[in-house]
Length: 260
Length: 312
Image (cartoon, rainbow over all chains, first blue to last red):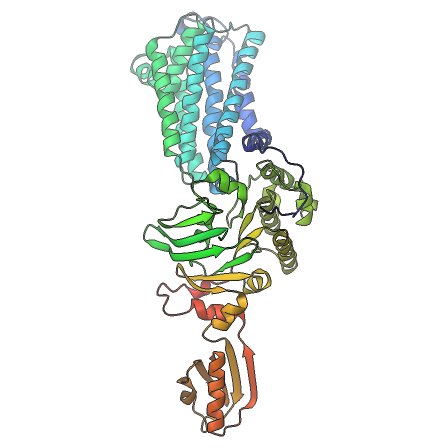
């Protein structure tokens, strides 16, 4: 086999397509200050602003004897997942398909699947970082106790992150253009925000509204996290609802993905 | 055995037949041109070679591998520059070439390649901020950086100015000179004539001619054009029209223009001699590849005749 000498070889080394994609995409991710702000900084900023509203840090019967701020910690964490999964990620993936980046990568030893996997992983990492920031700031600055049943809290949260990223992946995989992708994103954005309790804490909702919200991925997660925050194990039903959504959305997102 | 072997390729998209029937061999070390008007099936054919498209029927072997199945082997051997190949908008030129280099075991030096393609000054510029010509050259750099055994270039010099075009041709000659096989999809006859050892002309999803550029010109129905002055009274145009090897006769005032094969020219000269007509101002010239190409793709027997105005 003849090897062209279009330019001299650097040295023989093992190719690492996956690692090269990870390096390039990480660099690109850090070049999106807008996304980073909304995912990593905004949920904490919102919590800080609310902490200064008089009365929000006082225990109230509405929130089972805890303060509004206590009840808002899970919501802030879920908000990070919504920002990452619905607002940020679909635009990137849709643009990659529209601009034929996925197709270009498919002609190389790297796979387009590498790019998608890395994108999901990077957004998930930013979401988890945001969660750590929310927990740290609420604990250190405002004395909100860490979740008493931390493993259950984390389980419910991670399942919710998977479900929300699944919604985002489903949108970016099926929307025919970047424009359609952002429109669908906004359609999904508002109900997810509402059911995560951004406007009104899910635990304080009552009646039929609560039952409906409890059936949504972010609503069920908010309830499960709320109970774990207070030291109780979340009900099997709540966790099953979040887990069911996570599996369903992840499978749908993978199966429905259109490469071009 | 050819490096790339395409047999009885057929591909339809819904009701449109993109490729009707294509056979094509690409031999190691040659530059082969794939020519044809828009919609002739050029891009579909090379996409099947690259494994991006799976044909409905027919086979493709690239160094013995099936391009759409044996992805690992094929992507290791192949460099591709597609007509519509995007790079991440915020990746700089240098980062893009370095990323693709890292996909390969023994890549070329990204910086050296960037210099050679005249992108040194914009190496730190993001892809989206590059001009069309610079993006095109960057696409070529990413196709070559893995030091592929075969490189497929779809519309290599589209968007380049004449000088950059010539420099790119020189680069492709060097690439071939060092043993890389080149498959070049092009609209430009000059490019084909300058670069290609062999060309394949497609029209309506079929091969309508193949061979060296000179062969294709010589074998075209009107490889030669002759013109001379002879009054209509002495020599009506229809006397020549029926001669063997004469394809087209046109009268422009006192001047007759005859297009045909070399044999046709001799036949015309014989008639002139018999009739004792002196062909004043006789000119005989070989057809250019351009004209031969147009004659080929305009042939009425390609019933899915492509729209000529689309040729650019």
